[in-house]
Length: 453
Image (cartoon, rainbow, N blue to C red):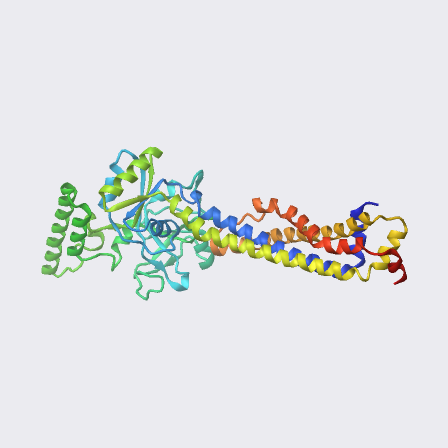
């Protein structure tokens, strides 16, 4: 009979105490596994796989805020760009794709206050992450943003609101808790399949419809000042925009004279009055991306941001530290569990003196007794760790559909982190450490005193 068999028999003799001490280790390991699985899901969202574009172009300001607002939709936009600038980007030979985005509105609070994204059909014809295309739920009659008031919704939006193709909804103007409602009703024409990205909790509208909504147009004089500030010395584009604004003034003046106060609003809005929040840009090469980004930095009111770098800083400086703190906390729980194993085995030594004495009398060496106690400690640590590992991943399997549905995070419940590869060797070392003193006590046990006790 080997040492671990004897240790296992000893553990079974004290079932309740052994089970409780192993359970304490299991709970600590379970918490660590859950933290690791969730951290892996967060890492998969906040990294380069989230978006399949090289650059995000927006108004100058914080690059992190630009990425958080335009990609993750969890920050308000910095400012807007003229819609006319979009055509300038498309005309640049270095740019392969330029997708416009307009933010600002939300679904009603009772509908989850999901962000509204004004865009074009081209958004859905490109990859949302490298190698993955958008897909819609298998519903008859689905289409893209062909109609003026069509809407494509993400999977989480559909799940929480029970919306399907054909359902209609209204939106609020400005912030998520705004009480200013838009009168227009939008119709769901497609439901996107889950992507594990912020697209799951977004509502996509036809960009042209966004410009027709009340409150989305600024005074002409304000727009003129913004265009002059944006274009600066670019007289050709500026003059074209100013000409459109002058024609708009004449049209509105004419409308006032004939009593038609809607002339020059809604469908009649010229491009010079329209704005976008950001542009997703895919360049023809990485060199073009770097050159274009540098060029904007020095000569434009716009800025081009590589979406990976700000998020890497965020992950390193904030999210990564939180993840490490959580793992350290669960590590401390495991250490406390190891101490409970030490207390359990050490306290049992006084009850096991006679047992140890009999083993010694039957020919067991001191080193064998020492090794049996160490093996018993290792069995409790490794057994508890294995049970906790299975419990942690089992918990992730059970709750991953709920977490994915409510947060949009795609959890891989059997994701194996590098931390897990060192978990069991550490538990083995912990078992040896906490079992050393009780094993030393057993080693020093006097046979005669033990048998006479």
